[in-house]
Every structure is written in structure tokens, then in C-alpha cells.
Image (cartoon, rainbow, N blue to C red; front, side, top):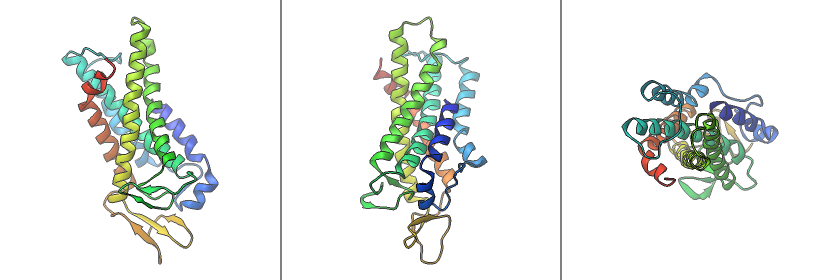
Amino acid sequence: TLLCFYASSSKFTRMGAARKQSLEQEYQIGGQRGASQVLACSLMGVIAAVLRRTFVGPDGPLNFVATTTTCWGNRLTLAYVAFFACCAGDTWASEWGVLSPTPPRLVTQPWKSVAPGTNGGVSWVGLAASAAGGIAMGLVHGVALLPLTTTLSWTVRWQEIAALSWVGLWGGLGGSLLDSWLGATVQITHYDPVEQIILKRAQPGSTQLGLSILSNEMVNVVSTGATAVLAALCAKPLLAFWS
């Protein structure tokens, strides 16, 4: 799941490089993920995986009739999937959404158009990409578990893949919207209306949107962490849909 996230995100980051370079001053053709970005897009997922291994046991299938122990296994598995679904949903939405043929709308004021690349801007292309990214993470995780479920019927195995893809959908779409809301409110965007480009920092004549409270990495930490925790807390109703 982790490898799929990084491989796909790196590929999409390089997609439409010339267009992205003309819209964002900070864009780098080779990718923009430093150590802090990698940590923000890995830490909570790794913690969930370690906790599951330590307190529940080796990786295994979901249990749709959960006891106390397997219930925690379900919660931590869903936290892991939802975490990477949010990471992928946000990244895919950013990389595809900025290439949308129509201007994005500010998530807090959907009647207001903003420049492509603005923190908090959403488009139909970006929303579809966030849903697809989330589903992809759930699907990959479900398929990766198939070798551990050989004693189960194919009906149950497909049920598990469907349930994880369902969690991925909501983790990707919901987490991306949460990230956008945070980006529009507590993360600052500097924009040069003359050059029509998103700036790294304020310059004479530039406009700004949002408050300078959280960095991009911190927004990612908050949105992915909240999505993972919510998925763990809502494990029962999420899985009940497929029981």
C-alpha cells in the first residue's frame, strides 16, 4: 500500500510538468517531497501497522463478526488503509486538479473561483481523483491480503476487498476535503495576480488567502491523522455495510 502510494504519487507529480511550472513557483519537475513531507505521509500509517502487529498479531483478514481482539485488528487495519487513502486522495487531487480545464472553487466559498494550485481550491477533476486514489489504496491492500486468506471462500475474500475499497473511497474523498478545508483556513497562499502564479512567499503586489498557522506538512499530518482515527472509531458501521 505504501509503495503503491509513493509510486503513483511520484508519477502524477511529474505529469503535466510544464503546465504546473507555469502555475506554481514552488513546483519542481523531479518532485517536491523532502524528509518532512515523507514523514507526514508515512508516520501515522506506520504506527497503526506496528500497533496491529504488536497487540493483535500478524496481518490477516478482517473479521466481520469481531471479538474484542479482532475488533482492534479491524480498527487498526482500517486506520492504516484510511491513512494512505487520505494521503493518496490529497496527492492525486492536487496533481490532477491543477490540470483541470475549469478553475477550482474555494472549498469554504464554493461560489468563488480561485487560481489553480491555491490551497483550499477544489474541482470536479480533483474530487474524482481523490476518490480514485482512495479506492486504489483500499483495493491494493485488499489484494495484498489475498495470500493470507486462502482458507476463506472467494465470496468472503471479495467481500473484504470491497470493504477495504469502500473505506478507501471515504478516506480519500473525505480526507482530501478536510485537507482542502484546512488549506483554505489555516494555511496561507500567496498569489501574484500579474504573473498569475502561486508564490513561495509574499512579494510586492501579491495577494494572500488563509492564515499562516500551519505549514503544508502540518496540514497533511492533521488531515491524515484525523482520517485514520475516524476510520478506526467508525470501523463497525463501515464494515457493517458489507456484512
